[in-house]
Image (cartoon, rainbow, N blue to C red; front, side):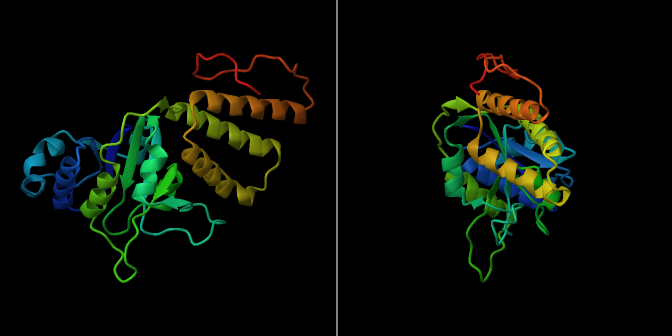
Length: 252
């Protein structure tokens, strides 16, 4: 199964951290990361019950970027979704059961990010993630306690069988996004469309869970297109750069 990491982003209450550790252990998960948590004391320990080991082994980091650099795929959880496909920040979104289908076949570290109890994740934080997950709730009272939200997600993700293929690393994907950003410069993409375009690309490739070979092939296609636009001759059989892969040149 994918290596599932549960991340609480700046949780406000230590009790919720303890409850989160408990529900993670209920469903066989133990990898907990805390971004700028409050002081963890007796309340968190009491709430964790027999999952004190999950709590004590949790990692504490200073920012979401510390999580991103070690992750293959980033999932943002949110109760607020976009109302239109034209607004890509929180769209498209998937239920926890649908998320299971998206990630079940991949090998790699999947980080599932849960936001603050009072206002969740910011747009800036969500824009750095690859997939959006939301829990269908009643319109009368849609707000879940953070530990309850974690419980719903880990219940759906429990007992995923071993993955069948490895996805491109975070470094490889960031390199690809950087290349696409440069490509938008090459084609004079409108500046006011730039941010939304880059977010949509992240959503597309997040759903696709690209392999290293696929990411490398996209680099080759972008580079060939850039050269044609610039009028630079490139032989059809030229060997392309294959960033981070030992599989040979990509098919272009």
